[in-house]
Image (cartoon, rainbow, N blue to C red; front, top):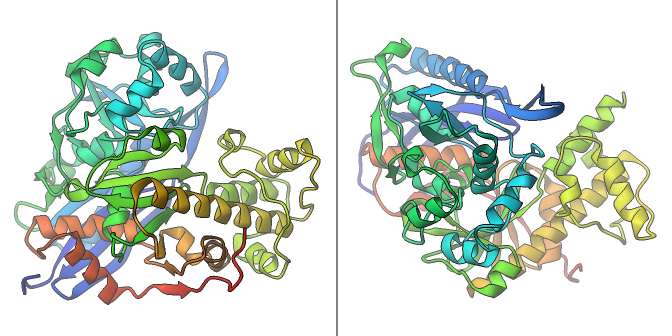
Length: 482
């Protein structure tokens, strides 16, 4: 990495439960994050055609992003770049540059109909060979099939995934960054729009914008936004716009012998590869091949993640119980390890609502006794998540041929000591936890490299992370837990 004077960038990181704008100072030996703004995010429930539909308040998120960038500008008018990452699959439809409506939330029940519509035209096996994606009922192509059937696409002339939509509003440039576009199910193995598949699904190719790679400078922050940055203003840079793609950039790992778990609302469990694995065994295990920065492949499986804890806490609080995650984790750590676990990937746990009752029902259907106290339920959630993580790590290793000697947990789950230790015990290898803000760090590093503040490959960028953010190490139990 060349000795370039440190400079600053802003990482806009939008998660499924919260968003943040981070002010990052980056140089050859410098990697510092300061939080400029943090704000909640979640589904908006509206009545729609006789049912309750879930949408994202993406225009509200955009307003929060602008407030965060104003805070950055007040502190640092010489900012070099802004980059946006967010969750995958959800999108906005546009007509003549105007958003036609707030994007649907991937947990909205409408997606089930899209699965039947798509599979009637293209078999699941063929979809996997073409796109390499695991089956998730909310993948973009299923959502688009519903929009096509309902007529919602008739007025649209543009399709932008959520981070690309925010980038468009900041820069005036409509593009599709490749790591997130890979989650649509509509890209070829070479990373181009799959024109024959788009045609077979009855979609218009003109909806989909030009593809760019992470690290491309898309444009400049629009002067009309009125943000008080110096000169012509910061660049707007495409980063790994799928938040997991950015997070993996900042995993301080040796990818030839490690697995990662990007643990937030979802737990993304996998390995980094140079090429795709589209075997029948991989499809049966529901492993996905998603685009990574610098052409790498994120070969991973989605596990339900910290959603199980956060939604359970919300339910107990709705019932009037004075509980917090921190207090319940402390109580849960003092309890014995449960003998029985539940399947953390069961689709019944996808929708918002009373998760503790659904988990109790899962146990009752099998003649098993569910925990009765919130702390007991938290302990069984943590152990069930850890077992799901361990199973996915083992599968990733077997399917890819990567010998997993360590597991790196990044994101919010890195703060959860009980989960990190349980994962180490169940995988049987050390777990290295941190950095917590891996997504924002990866976002910032790709920007910094694009504008010349640092140089080098992913391994060089990860070495910078390791020098500045030492992980917490969890050794596995001497007797393996299964």
